[in-house]
Image 1 (cartoon, rainbow, N blue to C red):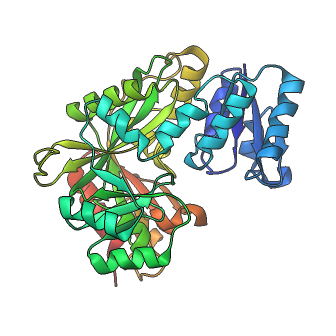
Image 2: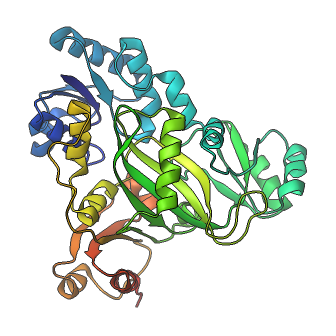
Length: 396
């Protein structure tokens, strides 16, 4: 089996996908813009061969790289980056080279925030009302129906980038004065916590592994206001979330992929959408949750999701991972350089010598959404999670 992995060096933990595939006997072919001599040894060891392009933004360069691998190794069976930024380019390459997996028409459906609402509706999941932003007057007509605040976001975009809350008419006027180069949609505002079902599905859209992550109410505010961020991997998966996620995967016809399905859990009743505690659709992401999240899932669920992914690609079933291990809460705490914190890493490590599993600087690309420095720690009890978060974020 020949598998092309786009950008194996970034994010820095993604070489693990290549490593597990290679251990399963796959010929893993990497394409990236990092010079070979700058690749970490673990990345080099995870690949059969590496093709360096000047920039992954150039479709022609990446196309030639795929063509070279196809000429040298024969038919390419899979091509993935598992990265939201490259999903459409991945799909275009699969379409042009007739490679297994989602083609360009499929990916448009789950990277367009407007189109994905139709699939949520097919899955019987309530969705926020929306319109395309065309003029101040049309937007105000919509707002008169749903009320302030509303949210405006690029119809196609990564995470919460360039997403804003419009609180009043002045905010809306300023939004139009600023101008926007890509299509934007406007949605009614939903009050609730963000929760996700993350996991891996087989070739028939059946969940083979999943977990639940719980996030703060607004990633948008974290990005726009440079706030600290905390979230955690839950020990157990709420039944209603599992049922909703299963229906979404079937509706989108998602096959052999790592997925990250985001929902609101309403914190108050919302007429037309549901009662407090109900689930409302947010976004579907057909790639792993961002940054170090796969590693947090591994710590919390006592598994290796990189290996699960490799097994599904190779065998369409889990062969090399035991799912019957103890489960924990695993939390992420992202700090900002602009704050002066009371406790240093060394002090926190002394307090939690066995619980802390990761502590690193975040890459600049991901820092806006996830913090400049982060901690990951696992606990048996949720009270300990809350205490840890408070200690890490305590200021002088």
